[in-house]
Length: 308
Ligand code: GDP
Image (cartoon, rainbow, N blue to C red; front, side, top):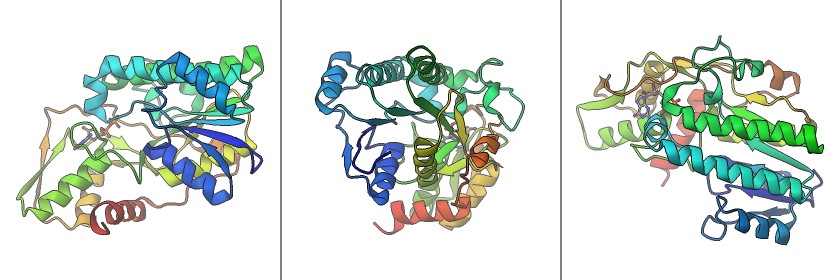
């Protein structure tokens, strides 16, 4: 990507999009464009056409999506499927129409089959049934990957997809009902410490395992792939290391310094037992993560709750 190329970051206010904007600015890119959702509703085809007609971007990072944790995915099922399909259909199709040189689509590790062997290799996609709690979101993301792949095959586009593991970092969602586990637990332990509460409720059995990646690492990997990689195979982006939800909860409890007790609410779903990414492809392409999990959680805890 030339430093003066026009780059559209869709979803610039979200955790992923804002990290991509930070990384682009840091590298010296000067013509980054975006729109707030009030100015441009990406689910509306005509608005997306008007935007591409006006801006004619050279490169696109498609980070706009409806996202959330296990409860949001499980309850807002129709919204997750409909809105994500509409957003990606509109942005990917107009990127083809307006001859975007390259597009990068952000998928998610929840698209792999629930009981796929671990670690998850890229080619395990579509080899088994999905985890029911996030099936609508996964179906939309799989459709997005297939759009990129088949626009490349039929029209000769250069659209790539990446598969991040569970993300955390600045601009995460801390709403207790709809967020992911890491921000939810940071907030719960912090508030319990502040309020001298005796107990904190944690969901599920604590046995599922998850892999966590700081979003600044994801942004660096995405820029690296945008500059060096072309292909129909999507690329896993993660640390290649996971831990149980119980171990994560204890780590966060220690970082926050909360001395009370943890109560496990097993009425809440566990979700996928494990989704550890195989990161050999991204390593062979010359990138590996930098942020250690403990250091990353300490950093977001400070940024969100201490240095405010
Ligand atoms: P997932 O990775 O799509 O399953 O989404 P989450 O990050 O929401 O949940 C991961 C795991 O953490 C699940 O097993 C949850 O039951 C568990 N978990 C434990 N406590 C919490 C919590 O307070 N919020 C959320 N979202 N998940 C929790």
